[in-house]
Length: 98
Image (cartoon, rainbow, N blue to C red; front, side, top):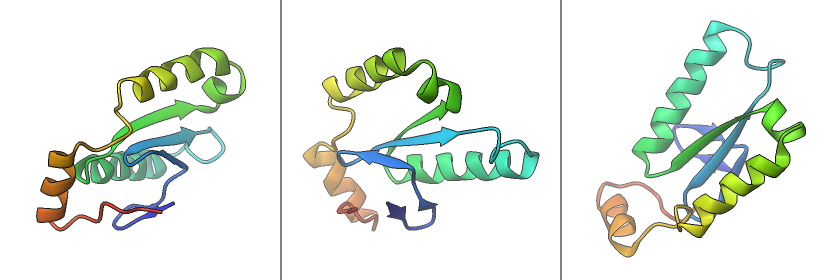
């Protein structure tokens, strides 16, 4: 999914749970690391909960990773409350990413 001011996000669950996967092949230099920090901050400013996963967590530790993500969803951290949605809209942020 593309988010204005951020670009493509690896995965978004619900309204606002952004999950980015950082593998060494694409995230080894300081410039890329700085870009990741910028993207994380931009997503958070737009009301997203950001989770950054290593490729190891996805490929070799999936059971633990899936459990942690399921807990976030179970706590409804993937959806905006009506008041959060209204505040974001007042601030001019889109809330209908698809």
